[in-house]
Image (cartoon, rainbow, N blue to C red; front, side, top):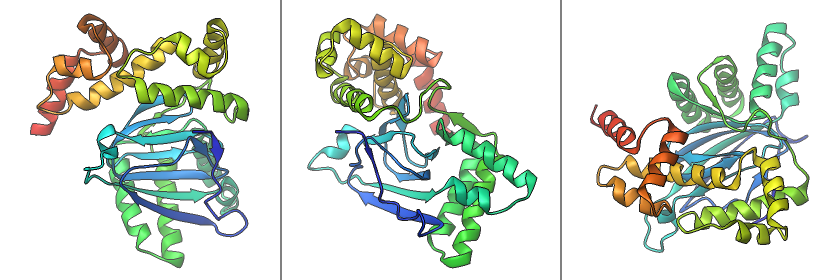
Length: 293
C-alpha cells in the first residue's frame, strides 16, 4: 500500500463539483489524497481510519470534510473481509476546489466564512450534532438532483459546514500537510503493518525494519510525523477498536481487552482511561444506556 494522489475526480477545469458514490463489500482505496476538497458521507460501513496524523474509528452516518492534499484512508472492520460476509459499504463524496468557492461570490461576509471553512479542512473535521443530521438530509436530496437544483443543494451544504461550530478537528494543529512522498510511503507501510497486526505483539525492531532504519532513527522519524511515540499510536488504534466492541451488549470487558492486543487487563484499563478519560465499564454502561433510550 503506497501513498498516492487520486485523480479520479474529473472536475479540475471541467466541472464545478463532482459527486461520486461508492458501494462495495468493503472500502479498497489506498492511503491517498486529492487536489480537491472532499465532503464525505459514510452512508453504510464501519472500521478504522486515519486522516493526517489522526487515528480513529468511523461508523455509519459519519460526515467528514477533508482539504486538498490531506492524506486519508478508511479501512473496514475485519468482518467485512470475510468470504461469507453480507455486509456492504456505501460512501458518497462531493469533490470541489477552493477556487470555485472563493470565486462564486465576492461578498465579504461570504468570503470570510469560506476562508474559515478552508482553514478547517486543512486538518480535516468530523461534523457532528444537529448540523450532521441536517447535512445528511441535504446529501440525500443532492444525489437525486441535477443542474441548478444540485448546485443549490451543494451551496446549502457548504453554508451549513462553514457556519456551524459542531465540528471535531482530526489532524493535530502541528501536522505537516503534504509531506514528501518518500516519507509518506514509509509511514504508510508502518501504519498498514500496525493496522493488520494490532491484536498481536508489535515490536519496535519489526516496524523499524520495515523502514530500513535503526530503532533510534525510526523513533525520531515516527515522532516527527505523528507527534506520538509508537506505543501511543498503537494504543490509540487498540483503544478505538475496544470502544467499538464495548458498544455491543454481548461483549464482556475481559473478552474485549484480549481482542485488542492486550495480555494484561491492568495495562488495558490504564490505556483506556488515559485515552478516553473514562474506564471501560463506565464507557460501556454509557453506550448501552444511550441505546436503550
